[in-house]
Length: 217
Ligand code: GAR
Image 1: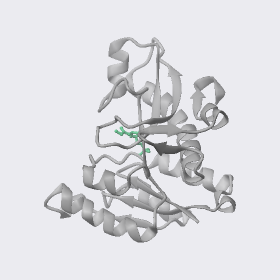
Image 2: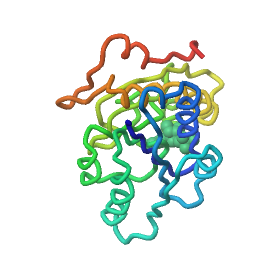
Image 3: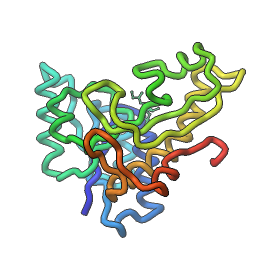
Image 4: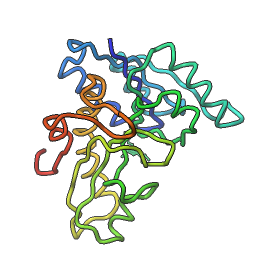
């Protein structure tokens, strides 16, 4: 069995989209399961959704640890027994140190709300509008020690429209996140996407399925 562990900090809509895809597409039949969802915030709305969906949840409250290192050791202690094959950051808003990233090297995926390598960091929608770009979107990538800098797995593209404000653009982008991320997670769990020597390996068919355009949905 391939084990997926999903890390969240808040709303958890990407976690829910992955969990719904796993049910709808019967990932279990392919030997892929969501082993647990872990939140660094006890009040994260996504935890309630996990309970409703019958998915195990774990809280590792970062506020209970004096240092980032101690917090990460506690997360590793909670995650390792689950034997994770893929760790999915889904709106997980804590920066991870090299200790955590190296411990799960080539197994951690993140979704970032911009077309990387543009607009790393925060406030991506606001910055895209300010820059006057005509397309925006989201990127799923392997996590490296460089913030939002790991090898790219898949991207989804939305237009930036004249009437957009950051919220409207974010809403349009989020709908595509919910299409793109489950596809990337499934492909990674099945070994159809791999990280080798710092580069992403996949066949043409998989690569084509991991580019999503807004007119597809
Ligand atoms: C998503 O839009 C995701 O791209 C973004 O946070 C949101 C989480 O929503 N992630 C980042 O900004 C990472 N730097 P969700 O909790 O509903 O999945």
